[in-house]
Image (spheres, rainbow, N blue to C red):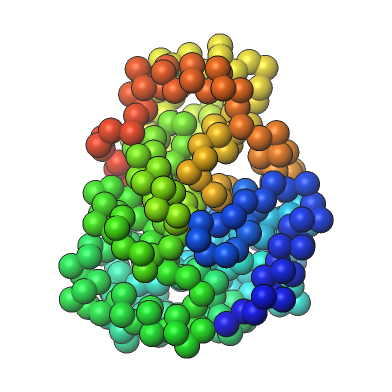
Length: 334
């Protein structure tokens, strides 16, 4: 279990940079607004083929920019191992969030490849500790969109509570989406909620607001829609069908509203503007892109009138907080 000196070290590291900081719900932690999405360290075929040296340089660059929140998972290929190497001498300067329920020694291919039994969760977390080269993980999130019934039947929640008492994990979190996440909103035991959220995918805007009002932390993933806005729509955001993101963007006339602001800057600042969101996960292996993301976050919320105009147009174009379809799937596992 980390002590107050370790937490202060993490906060001091981020404070030395220009990175905006924010309280992390009721956890007592202070986090950088931009978090590092560890899926980009998975290795082929899910992510670029980086050498250990390249990956270490990327992680250190993120830290030097003030990023102190690193999100990874058992089933993100080589991500945990690479992070462990990169953070070997700087562990006390970061907050590590990983995930459980994934099959130990395997890389899950879909949502069915998750088991929430004590044996699998314990094995997975012990494996994560070894890969990450640490004796504790700051945030441990249930992965794979479990239902409350599954966690109760298989013993997953009780297992994390026991590990929390032992100091093996700091805070319990949930990485999920509608409709599964709704069952957990009134559970005080879960202090961190990771949700899909961007200007083009606002389905969880209402969930984030509820979570925040109860004093718990919100981590947004998919903030830049997999960079599709800057890639001439060549990538498909997780949870959307092909062409759907561009259709919403064009129909809403976002370019006309934000010009000359770069599209990626807009996507980041749109989420920064939402007071319910604490950390915005962005994934990249390009240090220049990482710097641009930090610069965007540094600029802070969008102008009030611009934000309201954007919300109105997005709603009319089909990006709303209503119960609309969020498609399953994503990049193939390693």
